[in-house]
Image (cartoon, rainbow, N blue to C red; front, side):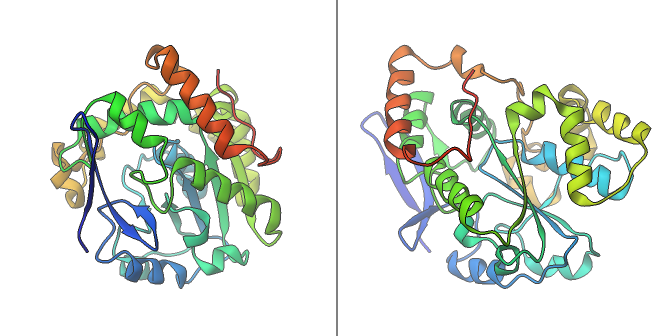
Length: 298
């Protein structure tokens, strides 16, 4: 499958694959469709967990919280299985409960997950912070899917063809929002990045309850301390953050996952004009979505 390259008048370029009229990350294997078929038929157990996010929305942070609670260990793990990118035969070697991750929008997640045969954790982050964090990430890796400045990245983010896994941020959020409303079979916990930042311990308790895993209070307090942003960033900077499979991204496969980890950082990046344009596009795309998705823009 050929890559799609879209370049604006200033030379800013995004690179992705197009499948069924939707944008997909260029690193998804082959023609995209074959991988999505494997994902759709993925066998699941009732205690398996799939963490679902748009990129740069706290994926690895929540993964480590879930992994520590599930395993009863405070050991950091930098490289979760992301089902759209990896050879899924690796799952044959994993024992349940498996903890998996995905950036796929709702229509492409495993059929068994839609039927409530595994647990889902959906994490949403303010898109203004997402676009800033995503640009920083793309600027720091080799073999990137974006070449250009923040202005070009910002404009691309607002379109329906962006570097993603089945849809723009707006499509991804609308489809997950609809699923939360309409699919009563889902076993799903909905979290926001901003609430995790403000009430981390409370959300750790919530996750443990959702997983139906009992841990001593002292252990959950230790989880809270271990997954503090600064701690994760420091651990990730060691050999624990390296990944042989991702060496083509540079730094021995250590992805630049941890930037600032703050809420509201977009206010130091957006121009007034960009903020006004973002609000207008947001209103146009997200009006009538309902009250099941609540975002914190501050």
